[in-house]
Amino acid sequence: MFSTIWSQYKATLTVFLVLLVIVVLEVLQVRAAIYPSLLPAFEWLKNSTPLGYIGTTYGSIYATVQAMHLLAMGTLGGLVLTTDLRLLGVMFRNTPSEVISNGTHKAFKVALIAAVLTGIFCVAGVADKVYYMPVFWVKMLALAVGAAFVFLVKQPLLNSKPHSEINPWIIRGMAITSILVWFTVAASGRWIGFS
Image (cartoon, rainbow, N blue to C red; front, side, top):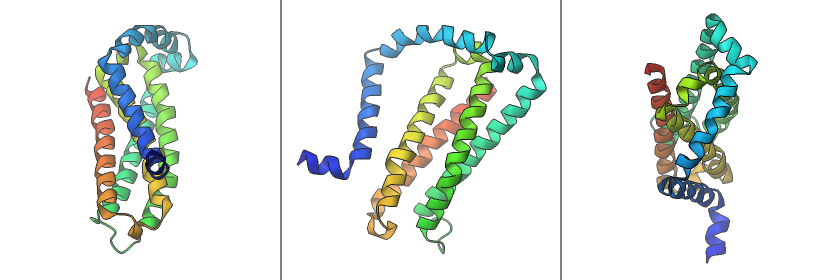
């Protein structure tokens, strides 16, 4: 029985197990033990790398890259909403959901790469500040969960068979979960901006 469930839901169970491990590690306070060891890496990023030097010395370059980061994150949010609202049947009802999800996924990958690369630069300029911000770590965790969800659960399921053959409640639940995870990324990013 386990092998049947595993073969049908391998990606979903993998993400669930990863999240379970994260929760267990948090309960056992493993993060609290690892967290202090990351400070030297953040200090190195700000004080010893060209990214940190440029980010702290040239405000106009930092602002430009930060604007590019916000555009990439906005693009991610727009693509996620477009796909998920189509899966929920809220918009683009005349366009097959397969067309929307395949088209947006290609752009999603490019926007995610752009967001990560510009995000690294943005962190390098203020690494000593964001290290101490719990909301930064929330955003990083939500971003990792969101990317894992898209690549390990959402897209494999949507590409497995025509959407009309997938249980509509599974599609709706997946779309709502996706919106909530990416909303967490956006809200925590905005919170970092206000801090």
